Amino acid sequence: MLYFSRWKVMAILLTSLIVCLFAVPNFLPEKMVQSWPKWAQRHIVLGLDLQGGSHILLEVDSGAVRKEKLETLRDDVRRVMREARIGYTSLVIRGTSVELRLREINDTQAALPKLRTLSQPLGGILSTTGQRSADIEDTGGGLIRLTVTEPALIERIRQSVEQSIQIVERRVNELGTVEPSIQRQGVDRILVQVPGLQDPARLKDLLGKTAKLTFRMVDQTMTPEQAKAGRVPPESEILEGEKDKQTYLIEKRVVVSGEDLTDAQPGFDQRTSEPIVTFRFNTNGARKFAQATQQNVGRPFAIVLDNKVISAPVIREPILGGSGQISGNFTVESANDLSILLRAGALPAPLTIIEERTVGPGLGQDSIEKGKLASYVGSVMVVVFMFATYGLFGLFANVAVAINVAMIFGVLSMLNATLTLPGIAGIVLTVGIAVDSNVLIYERIREEVRTGRTTITAIDAGFSRALATIMDSNITTFIAAAVLFYIGTGPVRGFAVTLGIGIVTTVFTAFTLTRLIVATWVRWWRPQHVPI
Image 1 (cartoon, rainbow, N blue to C red):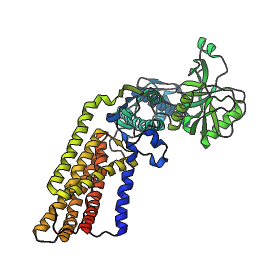
Image 2 (image 1 turned 30 degrees about the vertical axis):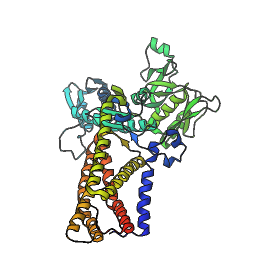
Image 3 (image 1 turned 90 degrees about the horizontal axis):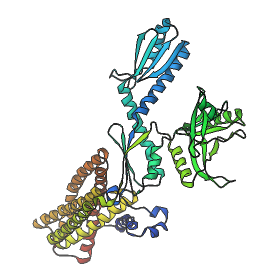
Image 4 (image 1 turned 180 degrees about the horizontal axis):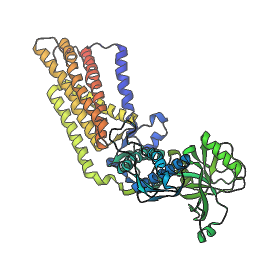
């Protein structure tokens, strides 16, 4: 156990050195690190509690979810009645229901089975709850009422939150921030925490937009002023420009939707040098866009984002390549933000900001300072105890623990992990676990010396026989850390990350590195007794 071949020595020393070197950028000026290669610029990200940042709580608009659910149900009823060739005189949304009045009362028995196909069991065809997406009621006189059930609405809100979390995460990551925390809170809320972002205005602007993009034709049958003075055509609506506040009469029919976009990037117009956003459609979107521009040359079409007209250019010639550009008096930042929104996709429902805070590190400065003080005092006491109890071997253990902590910082840097105050607590706990492994080894060596073994055999037996105990204790602790990481959120996960990494580095340093140090000492000094 005390013999190390040359390649093993080199492997242990190189592993320790390389991992420790990854921690170096954390202690150097940022300007110096930026001149290094990209792979060497990794560093630990301080969490919200250590460096401050933006804290925003979002809520899914349940009213908009309900409205969208009812509108979808109404469209489905219209489709089913058209396919069944059953006439009706009215189809309206009233309260939480869709009301259908048939033209002929005798068609009721034929219509009900068709409409019941729209009421699906919640949870799929294998569902055993018996709950359905809609209640269908024949109120008599040819009036049929379809009501969206409350469980169906709750399920749709849950799905909207899950989809929104993914989209919000993509939007925040596009800002270039590191390790944002985005998690569900309650049934219909999303908590967003971005360390290091002191001005939340741009973040709020990105998260507050639904980013529902549509391409629609401008209605030229009348001017917007005539439509406002008289009656707006049933297939059109009046929308306002986002920048110029000009009014437009826009057809409701969507030519191409933002769902058909595959990419969007900021750029500059080659003729005017103004910021623009270039976009590209998928195959289906390119086909529809080409067909629409071929049929409407000379007509203006509107690019509508969240019911605001970004621009309404005139189609000069057919656009057949499946790509185009959006211009609308953008700044460089607004063009970049719009491209972020389009790439990330539209939210399934509007998000309302119900709480926002700019969290400064000073809010918890007292806790941070006390945490640092506790870390320093605890580490010093452990070092003093090991040296006082085990003498020279205690010094070996302290060197290994110092390298262990450096390796923890190195691994955290390689992963670009976030370090929080609970994470610091995990590192301090790792120091205790690391010396605990050394204590097991040293006490085993003492027992072997008492039985009359020689110095070398006692040291060799101490390391070999303590290995199983060290592995067992560290594996069980690692399992606990893995469970904390999987189930926990926020600070709990920060604690679990540092503890899990610390356990791995502890096994390496306490057994392999300490054993190498002791073996080197034995080979150089040839001791006659164990100074322990």
